[in-house]
Image (cartoon, rainbow, N blue to C red; front, top):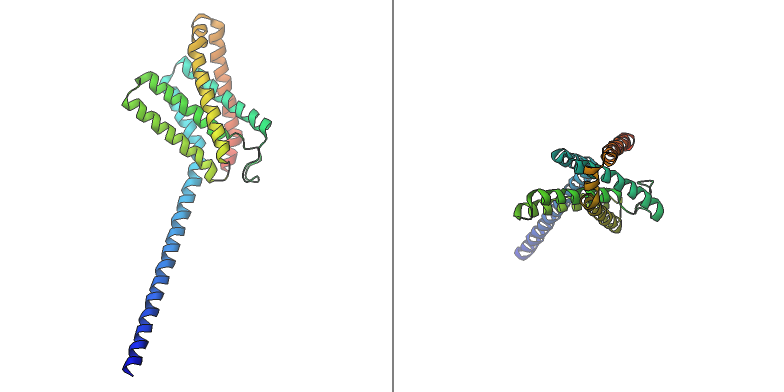
Length: 224
């Protein structure tokens, strides 16, 4: 009888332990699911705000520089965006989930615009501070910032990794070429020719006005 009682008590303890383990596993699963849901919600919000944050950062750099080269860069950012639209139509590669967006996905226009901005910011910082620990640190942060916001397009299934990679490469190369063109021949022509000055000033204003109309027609509509 004593042995039977001990055996039953032992089984009862095992059942209690198993129950506790199951409860702990369920709580851990629920907690993990809630944490994952919060993270996904944060990523969705950051992805939705990314275009506004990048545009605000780029605008801040332009206001900080407030020179003719900044106007040239503003024009370049709009030309870069138009280039992305043309490439999308030419390549006509579908997005990973076709129903989320109606336009093609190659290259990622977000990544292309983000890295145009990132490279211009890095060039401006290096031109201002030279190559030192501070300028390199800011440049690395800018690259990390651009890479993360580009990756969000993959996490939200709006682009594939190859689409944002191609967009980032095109945006970076176009920014470098646009920046170099200013120092190579545009600056000299800008200083010596009233016609070139008028073209840069009026062209920048026209491109920026067109971009503002695009923002009102598309970005604000997407937020609704």
